[in-house]
Length: 212
Image: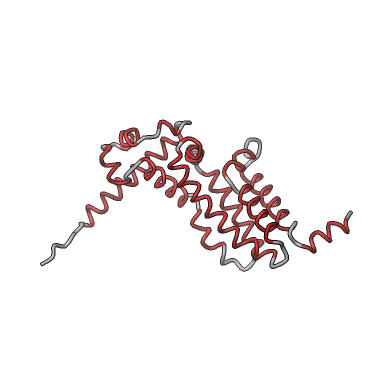
């Protein structure tokens, strides 16, 4: 008879608990240390109270661990709510919601600053993080045309998507947060994103001209 692999519920639970403890230790280090250069499997293993081999077996590499930390923070920060945005009947309300979700996410955990540093200091993980950020551009590429319909030229539409992509990024949020509350940053970005989209609408341009 073929040999069957069997993992007991207790062992699976223990493995999940260990994985969660390692991820929590990694996130804590990112909150505490201003430099991601000090983030390593050895350092995280020590902080989590496990061996380096345990961390390696769970995540495979430093990049794998950083990705797991980011994904855990993303889930806790509400990015899973983005799945519901495209189903909203009002695309303008959906755009406002996208801005709110990302403002909440960027501001909810100090570890995000360390993770974003990796784009410049850790090319391997930076590449993975950039790919995750591109999902936001894909979402906007589907959302913005729903607002403007078929009126906008293709290049203008892409320029607007790229602009809103930058406006909803972590560097933009961080730069604006220096002297503003998270709510104020969110309102400012929502207004700016709406203005960017309205600039593609013929009737909006005409209305603006009439007011001059």
